[in-house]
Image 1: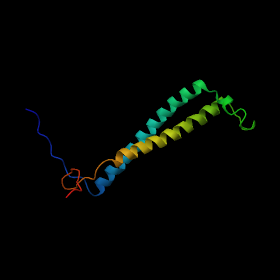
Image 2: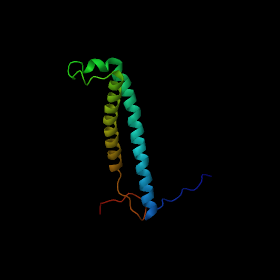
Image 3: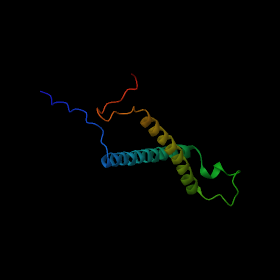
Length: 114
């Protein structure tokens, strides 16, 4: 005989609810940051497998600004990380925005229809 299904509990209120939201927010921030970091690492490897950082700005950048390859790799990684962080943040926001409001009494999505 299968175990009984637990009823849906109403949404928490008060300080516990705020703590849950704060924990969920930090979890989302961690996931977005880690995913964008890993993606930026892969993007950096693929991009710099085909392009040499010293050759990219050879004619455009003043000679005093040209550092070395390591500076080019570092700058490229942080640029890729910034772009992927923005994309992952937007994705997380759009996924969160798609959830319908929940009725506090029943714990089910509330409908706006009469």
